[in-house]
Image (tube, rainbow, N blue to C red; front, side):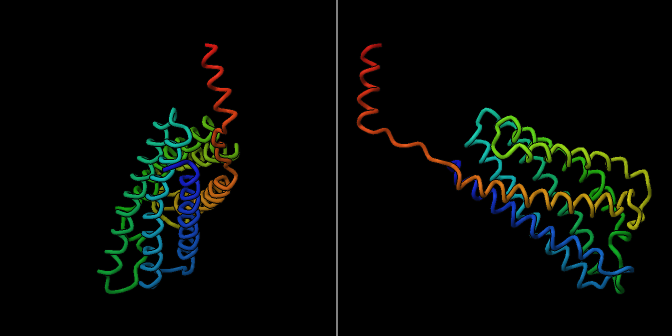
Length: 232
């Protein structure tokens, strides 16, 4: 895959992934009590599609790094691995929530009822996302693949995620800001990541149109190159 194609596809999948996450997050705040099953299953389905798109995004980002900055390919691989594990862990959490809702004979709030997801959505998710963002920020900064703000904002968001890592010590009340499953730990961090990914996707897609392919050597260039080699 050439660099221009990698930039364009990375941007498109970043935009699609971010859009799905942006649609999903507000669905968690429509009801004050246990939401109806349709609400829970709809937001989980959107989340599953978003996570599948995130896997494609991380794969394409690694291809972009490989094409544009092969010296930093290992950072692209770290970002790919962290993004893949984050998506996998979150998909498991979504499956646990969906199973609990389907099996229940009355509306339940899976953010409280399914205790197995507290740390998966919270502390574990925050660590994995911080690793992903740090790797992305590092390669964007070193290789200058995109504007400078993309790398700096990735570092900033990684730091914010690390702030919420100790939230597992602060209970399981979703309405609390800083709790294992609190709205700050899960929803706020998810929303910030979504909008950051949207901006990154737009930037990557726009950068593809600004790439100027190298001109093919003309006859005079070939003649000058031959003359220079003869002198050597």
